[in-house]
Image 1 (tube, rainbow, N blue to C red):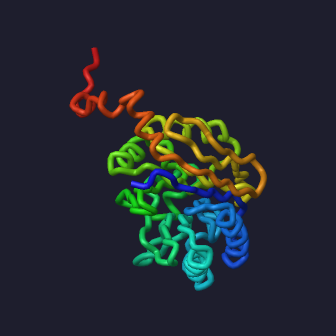
Image 2 (cartoon, helix red, strand yellow):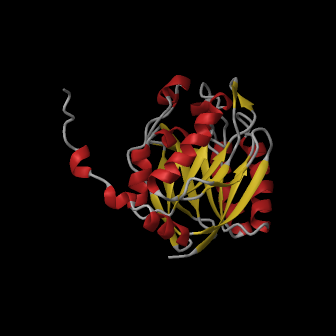
Image 3 (tube, rainbow, N blue to C red):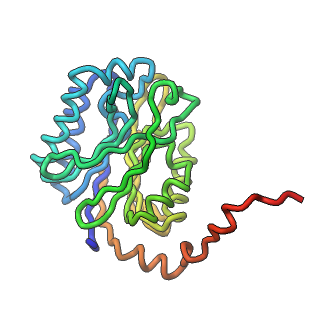
Length: 270
């Protein structure tokens, strides 16, 4: 397993229905991350079409949107970096809020479809839910995938960690009104499973939602080793010492203390 991974996190806005303009912004920021030494770059959720869910299905099916993903592949190859980006994927006429993984050779090697869709904004009506969790072999280690609302579900992160993930990449469009939740949940999910998180979040306003930024890289002890502000376009690049995971787990052996036999039983109410 690799012991050092240079991970980049991109924080930016996304203009609704403008995949070409969004690709220009992403291209500039990925180039900046690559020039700062990133081996892997994580992008926010729905970075291709924005978060206007009323029009997301129509936009996802456009040929311009298809060219966005192809543009990410060219970008990964040109900059020699891996990219994990939150985009729409259309399959059998169903639209999925997805995270695609592109190798430094420009090949799509994996795709995760968001399992937990956020009801208050109508994600459960705009998208079909994913039905499997995904871990990708990447740069000598394993990286799990998650999207936004997923961070409220520790079971997902535990499953990814048990599958050998040392890092979970989180593509997100998390709102500013719940900024405290964002920071708390990132720290909690890293602590729960004692893994790294690289979380890329939106800024700007889209469909009357103001996004919170605060993109971060969080270590297995729940410490945000790097964090962006709440309003600005930004690029974070952090060298991750993956051996820290073993040291943290040796100090507090959470996994060995779990009682799966107990959790699976019925709770007695007295």
